[in-house]
Image (cartoon, rainbow, N blue to C red):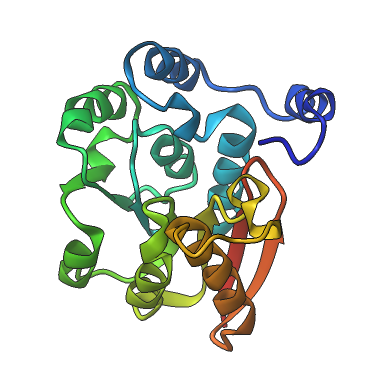
Length: 213
């Protein structure tokens, strides 16, 4: 869903940093071979993720929800030389697709893939993270947030995707719509949580940036 006109979003994209060729190829192959390609971050949001990572200069990044690895590679652009990314996904069929593009990039050795439930995997990760990107199943967003915030550095940043959920957060939410209910609760939770300061950006499907105090 566009929260600004497609024409204005195209203008913003055209006047932002160019999309790297490897990511353009990843985008094309995702649309050719993978179901629900709209889940991919894409050029405009990807350049924002890259910029945030470059500003933060993280040593360790955690990504919850890899999909085909587009956002992973955008986040990797800001990694310090000794930095690492742990990225978690439940879709075994995408592991080889992700690894292909990770290894075509300069960051392949810095990216570790984890297959399985993030709820189970996050507690086993013995690292402190400077940057976290949450883009997985919506009903667990609050659970993911509470699991990762204890692993964050002071001043670390948690970025959460899809927080406007195609505008459904503004509509009357049906009791059976678990994802919209979860996103609405998550947005309220972040705004009220004293451990972070948060801004919600109407970029693509909504992106929240939360800084750990």
